[in-house]
Length: 239
Image 1 (spheres, rainbow, N blue to C red):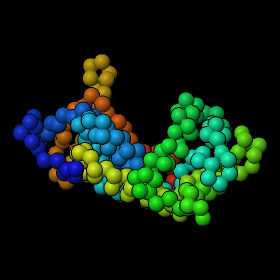
Image 2 (tube, helix red, strand yellow; image 1 turned 90 degrees about the vertical axis):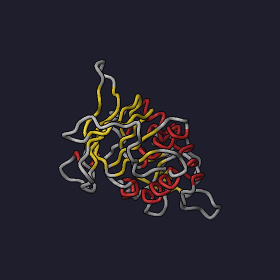
Image 3 (cartoon, helix red, strand yellow; image 1 turned 60 degrees about the vertical axis):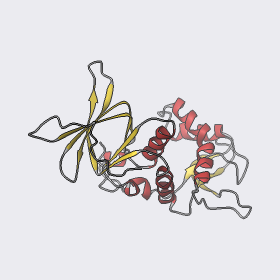
Image 4 (cartoon, rainbow, N blue to C red; image 1 turned 135 degrees about the horizontal axis):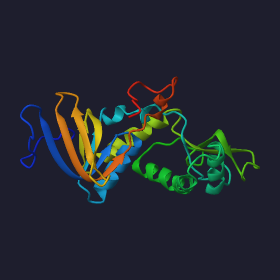
């Protein structure tokens, strides 16, 4: 993987007064936290020529600060069911959450955790060697009737740190180009309202880079900063 792409002969500068560099990819991912890295190397794995634009070095993304863990109905502590996890998530959203998205997330959560384990994420373990699951807020068994659920898979109190470093290490296996310390300024929108890529600024020299792609993934996160008071770092800019 190339962490700082250099202009190739196919690129051209469109203005002499202000440097604008053009790039063309099959897919562009904005953000290199947990979601952005997984999307970027997943696309590269499937054969897409992929760029990942990030204003920070990937391992400084705010995923690194997450402590608690990942809820998944593995059933390693007591019998569990993803449908109970689904119920708890819908209820926890005060019935305002997208129930189709919640359905997909809770049904696929166990598979996603096992995938991370296979990537080498060092989950905390039970004495039997299974992934340890701790109690976490808003989680119950049997649609709220079975008491507190132990559903949260963790790496001690450093789950986000472990997750991000595991995914970054895995991403180096794939031929994905990283635009590190490039700030995405805007989406490139076509005449029909379709997204055709992003325009980004290199924070090192102020040059503008136009990344054209038929597929654009927004994985910028940072939503804690939408609130007046939050514990997110100031690198979270709610773009």
